[in-house]
Image (cartoon, rainbow, N blue to C red):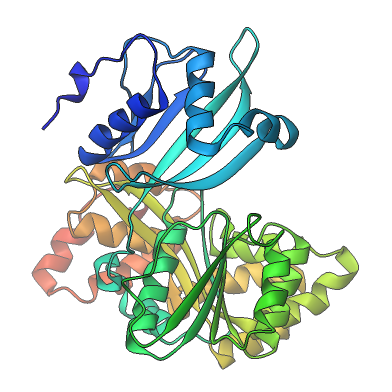
Length: 397
């Protein structure tokens, strides 16, 4: 067991030195390592950013590490694109990383930042995500479009990978993934299924090209790493319209925001028609956020909506401005809001009162939170209910 506060660096940080350092901090539980020109090394441990080294790492050292990880052409690639994403497998210690190298300014001249997120070899088993019953049932039998959303580092890819691994073991499926970069390796998870993984842009130029490629290969499930633009969204919807199950991710601030973000990718004159298509295709939309837990680990809080025919019919008969309100009301009948997820985690002693209060503002969501608190508390006996209702914390009040 190494003391992370006692780590020292050689006078020149080589690629080999950096991988040794990475192996130590990952073994201690770090989820990310950040290396930037003329700055110390930082790590992320249980969601907290920590300065690891007393000295700054010089720009030429950071660039040497970048060349070691990617290759001699890294300067020209980053200079041309501004950033580059790739996966890196460290053979010395077996760790797998998602790497981003981006141009940045260090106050004197142009520098670079290397962000390395730790990715497990195999997705963790689906039951270990502790999904709510309704959500778990939907993800175990997906049809149409499954969308997992959230901020960077919120576990979107991890959740989808666990779903794919689970499905590959319990069903006979042909699964095609298009990722940027490939993160999880499914060699130990295939069961009676076959999984083909393609990396964008190394193997194919774009996600939209990947979907078009998939449609020529008769898959049961298509996984698209991320919906970044209209072209990709068009391709994803086309695949779902032809009867395929499509799983993908999107950056958003919530379930409702995710649907809104997809719709605004289309020109205004197309949105009403494309909304109709999108609603008909939707199977499940999940938004996830990782927050500090009482035990020092990260806790996943989720809001979600599972679509059925009744909800789809209600939505397609509406105009665009009315969709948001109906979707928010649907959390009570077809899923769960973020505030109910936070309340449940707090009552189960998974997150602290301070974390709960910071997540649940009393103003804009007070009414929804009170309604959902009532539903949650009905499952307790009367004495527990009285005690819980007397608790004054954040959005539960």
